[in-house]
Amino acid sequence: LNHKDYSKLDTNELKEHYEVLNEKYDGYLSQNLSLDMSRGKPSAEQLELSKEMLNIVSTHDDLHAEDGSDCLNYGVIDGIPEAKRFFSNMLGVSTKEIIIGGNSSLNMMFDAISRAMLQGVYGGAANWGKAPIKFICPTPGYDRHFAICEFFNIEMILVDLTHEGPDMDTVEDLVRADDSIKGIWCVPKYSNPEGITYSDQIVDRLASMDTKAKDFRIFWDDAYTVHHLTNTPDPLKNILTACKEAGHADRVFMFSSTSKITFPGAGVAVLAASEDNLNFIRKQISIQTIGPDKINQLRHVRFLRDLDHLKLHMEKHAAIIKPKFDLVLNKFESELGGKNIAFWNKPNGGYFISLNTLDGCAQAVVSMAAKAGVKLTNAGATFPYGQDPRDRNIRIAPTYPSLTELETAIEVLCLCVQLVSINKFLIQAV
Ligand code: PMP
Image 1: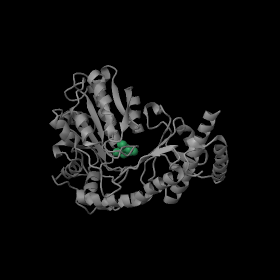
Image 2: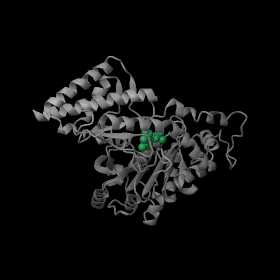
Image 3: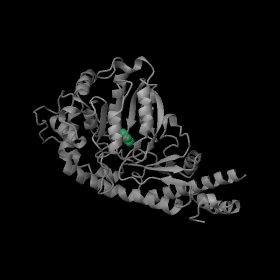
Image 4: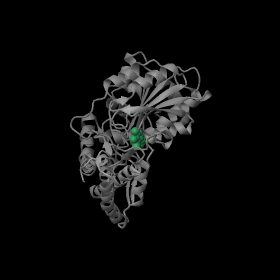
């Protein structure tokens, strides 16, 4: 029965198979496992790759930036020149189009929305908080984006994420008709959780579409821009250039960080956008802070150096995490392949594998796995309000556990998917 299409099995075969699998599951229950695959975190081995960075800036080093500013002292609101150069190269923007922030890009996204709610955006007629507003949320997507919208009471409109980006026919219709739609969340490269990269056409359509709201913004969260798993990285068209070419230079806010390049707890985050946008934002930020941590900027630039060196560094990450992705994908193929009960993507980069079960099964699978000591991201987390309308998406974060732990965790997960699916067929058969 191991590779048969479950939908073609009769009730007796299903019951028989259930017993066999359930016995295996009971075996895991007695092992008191405690495995966590709930968040996309680098493993300890990955963090080791950047530890040397901590020695780069010490008592004996010159701690001045190349323009002479003392990184130990106050000042420099938007980043030291060498950090601006490095990150503008990474994102393909000019050094005038970037602001270096603190350690978290999520924080910069939250702040960007917070400022817009209170004071509006560059060129906008009113602050976003003045009247109810909405955001388009391609789904499945990143739970923390949705949490920001919930926090600010921004209504979320679900739009399907296809294999090449958001369903643009729907997006275009929505933004053309409704001026309360002020934004869209995008994770354009190796998206969280689907692992897809936006095609050039999608980037162009986002840049050029007609929006009823003249102060519409694309929140372009390029968190995984250099996080490739293969030697043939997905190309991504430059959104800021596309927006300028379409006559909408101010439409996009781009975000990124080194959270998964160096340290998630102590990286460097950036915001890139048109000069007009940044002039507007810089004034507001200078009320908030006298300046972010320049020592960390210096440390990062001296450690990562340039794009060639960054590439080598990311290859070291890939060497550690690619076997983990392969393990999950191979296990899915061997345990779930051909059974018509689960479908998954094969990402070329990023941090996640997205698993879709049959409709109505994801919550049951996640809680069954949790009972056996395997913690997964909550079912529904990849949708606004934590509610997956089809209850089928499960986000797999393979980077943190060891290969051995991962193998066990995925075996348990695959067992749960099979058991819950059989249950579904048996209930349908009644
Ligand atoms: N954006 C996406 C799409 C992410 O997956 C993550 C981390 N899980 C973040 C942002 C968080 O970024 P940061 O650490 O820079 O706040």
